[in-house]
Image 1 (cartoon, rainbow, N blue to C red):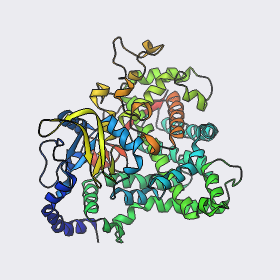
Image 2: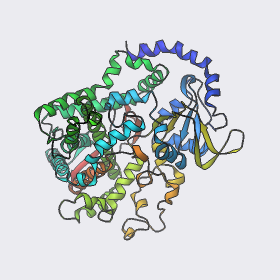
Image 3: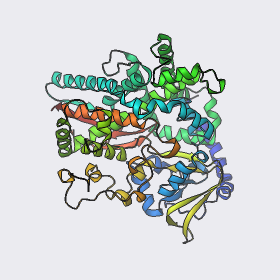
Image 4: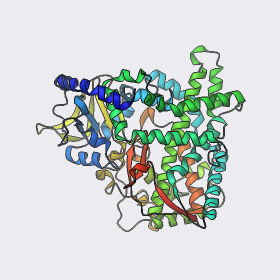
Length: 538
């Protein structure tokens, strides 16, 4: 059975859902919460939400309705609550984390894509136990020791690109989305599991297959068929248990990595006693004398899947979009290269962590992470009745001012991270790549900032995530590997921009959200995930 046949069979059932929509509305009772105009009878606002480019639609709705509102869901499903208010976000993510798990339709999707690891696990006790197990692998002290492996991969990538440029006669056009993923896969393999995929060099096919298969899955999620499939799964979640090829295909990356994990364990490449890499920590847990603290082999495989998939793809996206953005702004790229070339040798973890060492590099990285968060939208569900406090009151449908929103158990909530990160009320020119916004008012900012340039808003007006953006989430479920991601990210940009110049091709991009946020060239959308740049030697 294929998705088209499945969808065709679901249409009559979907019609039946309309019959009970009134009951749903009474149950969830968001009657007075404002809603945007122009909802489709069949698709509600969800198709518009799916087609959103660069977070523009969410921000238009913020302006129309305020930072919390409801949208009409497709096929008669109950209204969906959209939350961009910073106080409500803190309430959901930091203060009441475990009352707002991933929605039921996303949990099996996460399991198929990343395994039953830290992203998938729900419940306070289970999550805290799992996070406590893996967090030591990503401590500052441990990440400091990963520098040698990270630089090995970065220098390998830079050397390969330089050779490609020379062989092409001095300039080559590349899709940066295919450039970074092999490197970030090699890094997470080396620092986390003592395994080198050799994806950059292309010596082994396993690494390239992982990056290619993941990109294909992400592209499928960005297609209309992928959007429709999610709506079907939301109405009929039992479909995930059927032996459909489309569902099996979503787990292709995870299954491939599980097979590799078995080989890693069989080859004995890990120090089970003294090693502080993630694999050694997991193997010691597997041998723990206390059954309550023991981790079985199947769980180890899932951890490997989670950190290889999430650990390579998200950082690769950030590197890709940084190089794309620098290609569009040669002045910023030139100033960044001057800054990087002024530093002798290879900077350490502490050099990169100190924003005064490379102020412009830090600003460029923050600006790219703001504009292109890997998780552009999150979907949560309330497990119990609750009340969401608001920083900014919203005007209710009856004209009254609403200072808090009661939510019922089962309420679906969308968190539009990219809309929050680009909100013009906070960032003024939210769509503009302007790294200097992070430097206004700092010593030496005159090198990068224009007189009177707008800087950052006060912290209380920004969200509670890292650097006031929502890219790494916030609270107990914020990204556990953030230190490694930032260190690796900066090493790769440092190494590449010092040696290479990235130039525009004239292509314009838009973004789509599938498994992660990714670009497509306008007018060439059928080419899939793509952001072309020209590369030459510096």
